[in-house]
Image (cartoon, rainbow, N blue to C red; front, top):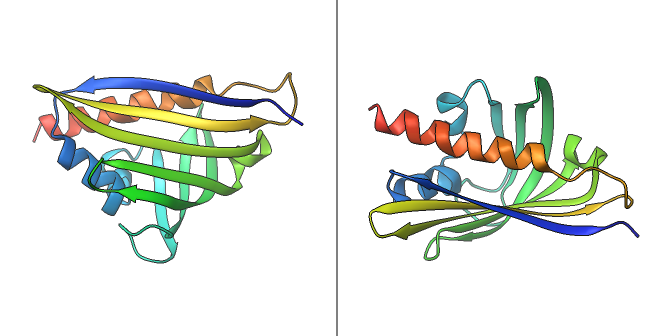
Length: 151
């Protein structure tokens, strides 16, 4: 059995929590327009955007390499602005036995916080930790904030 792990990071931004959560929950394909240097495509394979159980194929870039990952939106909690996306096949599962991405958008006074978490299982004790993916998510949040604040 590999090593189970969870990593979390919180990013404070000056953007509406509702606006940011709506992007991830019901219009994730818009991330391709906002961040073409990070995302190439977001293709709906099953279900409906904004609904739990929808299956999406992401084509994206990490460390200068093109990657593809298919997954399912397991949870879309609009009240708590929380989503859970489980990777079911693709490049991430070449590095990890299991991998789930969770994001929650929270209002904290005049600030919005986007919390990113990943739950993973490594193939063995010596496999990599997903530090580069956490850096990627921080960059995504910052780039989305910059995009909307310049409008």
